[in-house]
Amino acid sequence: MKETISYKQALDNNIFNIISQAANQLNVDTYVIGGFVRDFLLKRNFKKDIDIVAVGSGIDLAQAVAKLLPNKPKVQVFKNYGTAMLQYENAPNDFIAIEFVGARKESYQWESRKPLVATGTLEDDQNRRDFTINALALSLNKEDFGTLVDPFNGVDDLQHEIIRTPLAPDTTYSDDPLRMLRAIRFATQLGFTIEEESLQAITRNKERISIISGERIVDELNKILMTDMPSTGFKLLQQTGLLHIILPELTALQGVEEVEGQTHKDNFYHTLEVVDNIAPNTDDVWLRWAALLHDIGKAPTKRFHKKIGWTFHGHEFLGGKMVKKIFTRLHMPLNHKMKFVAKMVMLSSRPIVLAQDIVTDSAVRRLIFDAGDDVEKLMTLCEADITTKNRTKFKKYRKNFEIVRNKIVEVEARDHVRNFQPPITGEEIMEIFNLKPCREIGTLKEAIKEAILEGEIPNEYEPAYKFMMAKAKKMGLKQQQE
Image: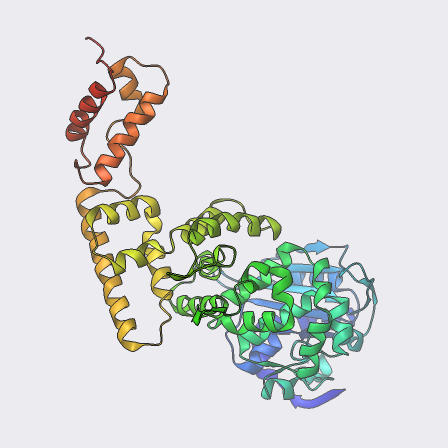
């Protein structure tokens, strides 16, 4: 069904005239479809990518467009998918990615989200789209350029802020279970509501998520984490049962136990508050992951003691260990990104303890030593961890963290502990005492480090040398004779 409304304003970029010209040469009906149209109607920022569907060969159309462009850009062809892509230079060093695909219809097999594809009509192509708001198309054809094609009332759903599937939701989600995560992600990004039947269908089909690769799942989780209010998405993931399958370590935190009248806070909802708190303060997705996982060690370490109540001893250390298992299971990077998240989780309570006690120089030195260049990010995480609703306590905790921050600056300026390098190297120790590699070298290096961190000696060569010689004498080591 073609509407008579014109949306030519969306197509004021010259690239659409060029695509239209190429389509006319090939006598192929062509449309811009999906996110570009949706975001134009929502008045969102243009994200520099455009999807073009041709009722014919998308590859042929891409190559025809490239020939009409001044710089004749290279066309990337993906024959297996029947798609092609080129980069259009909209302005100097300002490129738009344009993907061309032939209109198609799809059918699915139970064990895979990869469809069997056949040539189709525009209607077939819109039927295969995930949501009505992503099935909107604008004609690039000469005779009706700029006309909206909206067979599923996607404009109404945009206006009413609803996520709805074009076909029956059970079919849409069972065919490609990744769409369940995409529904939640779009709802979170746009502040929309998932239509009730669609939400129930996600719950019914949640087990189908098992056929989706960890990489695809994490891509959607990252996009949810990078929204202004990530808790919206994680509450929907929890409500539909998807979160228990994807991140059972998080759902294990849910609930409040009471023993002898003593309770603890619900660490799942506390975690979501922390993630929301940190969102305005960082664009670092890995720091947001650290906020999401900072308390995962609390479920397995939770204990009740009659004298002191609920405890979670060692939850930071265990949580840090659990990070690697989660990253491995979800096929996330096991490089410095995973190590950063694990370190943040392990250190997540250290500044909090400092903020509650008298802030000693030695404790701050150790914090700087352990956190290194990430000490500011650690402080950002810990400040986000303040979720008390008591305004007096909130102000007190914030003030204490400010004291810790100032102390970090003061101690680092004086003692240079960040990225600590010992004033005396292991090679020097070997030469001074005529030693081959042995345990004594490590013992001396560790003793020097501890003395500096405890403030017994400054982080300088001469004091470190004198300290080392005294320590070596006690160990029975003798200096090599000149």
